[in-house]
Length: 189
Image (tube, rainbow, N blue to C red; front, side, top):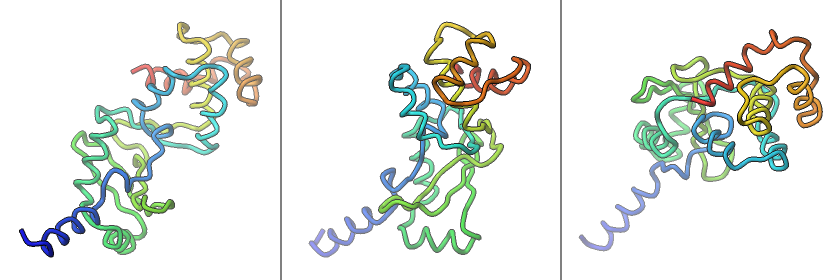
C-alpha cells in the first residue's frame, strides 16, 4: 500500500463515528451504569452525583446491552462522518430514531459538545425503558444508598431522606409512591 492510499484510509477511519463521538448521559439513561455508580456511592458523595440528573423527565434503558455494546450498535447504524450525520438529521427534522438488536428504540440528535456530534438517548416509551421524573429517580437512588437492605422505607424515613438529603417536599402517603417502588424494582433488576 503506498503512502497516499494509507493516509486516505486512516483519514477515512478517523472521520467515521466512534464511541468518543457519542454524547450520552449514562447516569440518566442506562440502568447498568446507574447500578455501577450506586455501588460506589455513599451518603456523602450522592448529592453531587444527583445534581447531574437535572429536574426533568428521562427514559432509563434497562435492556441487555451494556454500554460498549450499545455504542457499537449505534456506531454501526451511523457509520458516517460528522458532516454527513448532521445533514442526515437536518433532512429528517433534526433527529432520527433507530432500533437496535434488542428492539429498543433510540433517538439521535446533534451533539452539543465539541467532537461529540451524536447525542443519544432512549426514545420515549421504548421497549426496555422506563420513563422517570428526575425527583423520583433521585429519591430512589438516595433510598437505595441510605437503606440498601430495605425494600421500602416507611413514610417517616422516606420523608427524612427527601427533605434532608434531597431538599424535596415530603410525600403525604406511601400510596403516592407506586412509581418510586417501580423505579427501585427496575434498578434492582
